Image (cartoon, rainbow, N blue to C red):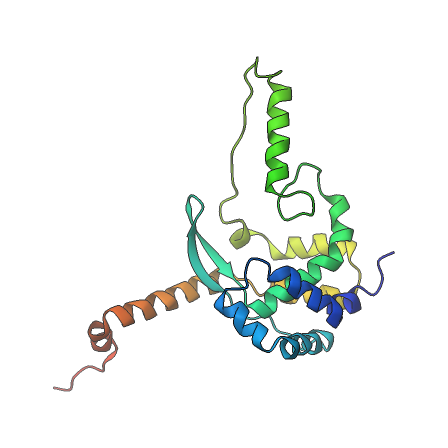
Length: 212
């Protein structure tokens, strides 16, 4: 049923559709505007690199957000995120039927608003129209993306996808993220900011010892 997955992912038409999907609510971002300046050139270059298996995933930019708790986010480049959308658009029909019906967010027709609606209905049902107590467990997996086992994740994906080239793409994308690498990048950015804020202190620290 699912044939030519790799060709469908890398097709220029699919990459342009992925761009249209990706750029929603991001058009005023500096990196998005920069990519759009040479859109056709960038899309066709991405197509060539992936199709010839010379594509290499770029680095991640780390920055904190508060929603409401403070956490560190790692953002891939625009080029890489366009490819992520292209992969998801082709592979969603394969994996969507395997998800539980009450898994919400990042699914077509299963956004956060639909999740809130389902929760409200579930509370009414369990509490018998708010006449009985019911309990909700609110929890999170600490640093999930930092700790997820890549080998296990790849094994799960490869059980349903037999295309060798798509498996190569899985490894390239998933293997691009390393919590150690992100920690080093955060430290590098931190040091650059310190150097900008306190140039004299940084120059003293980096200077050679004086001869006596």
